[in-house]
Image (tube, rainbow, N blue to C red; front, side, top):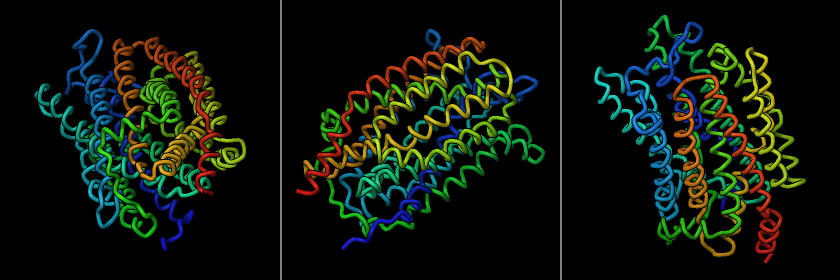
Length: 450
């Protein structure tokens, strides 16, 4: 008999999400800010590391930094099914997922620090190469931790109730991790007297990486995977498993809208610091306050989202979330100067953030569970990897589009990214109408009873 899965166990599991989301937030929210752009009197740290790498466009309007970020995301996407197949087919004594998390947590945190510390030599070409290599390693390590971790969402979510609960918990810890990453300039400001302007940023990254590392190790060593999950290694090869996953019609419908959503969201997240500092003319130290406000409002809505998802279904709420983000993107496009616009965007974004932070993972877990019941083979890792493979391609394209549109650094160029995000998110909402949630859940109940 396996031990019973409890909400306490799911909360401990969710701590790992806080760790990797903090590392991801540091890189995704601040690398572009510190490695591109130019400083001004109000925000002297903008582009503080820009002189160390090539800034001018190298192919049409594509910058080296934009290409490096895009290639990193594509590389990340390609490694997802490989790691998922490795995890699905593994048979370690500690389980199919936990051993990966234990092994990679410390190197993952270390390479995050390296991204802000190492590409700082006097040779620009060396810095370019070093930045590229470190970013590839960063994405590889993130995949090795996150792909097995995400597979546990379906495996620990043994019931519909647990799937929605674990999705809620990890969404909370994810958003907290992302929000704390926005505190980076504030923390660096506190340390500037000790380490100097550049050194304080690196030291702040180091402190956040250490906290993230501890958070990732907590579930990795607390949860004894074999005590809760009766998993058998999958015999399907990685790319054959990936093809089988995309042959699932309902999964494809979900993924199409998910790719478009993440393209729009990545444009917005990458540009958020610029929207606030360039369009609204807010000091970058306010970024954390605004993000904390957005997080607080979003978290306050989590219980409501959890309840409504069980009563009216996930599909209706997800579509509502898509349209909610469309409104946020429009506000950003038309915004003026002042802190008021920053708070308006923060509060409005909190609603779709709560919905789309929780429910998509539960949808993937539903589809993975139905596949397991129909085929007798548990390929949960591949379903989550296929999802991340797809949306990371959208993120890669968004990185190229953002850096290409904003190469001039004008206010209008940043507004343009917001309107592009609006139209793509609208398309994602329309596509998601095709997803048949009721059919999936009814089949799961039918097969479990049978």
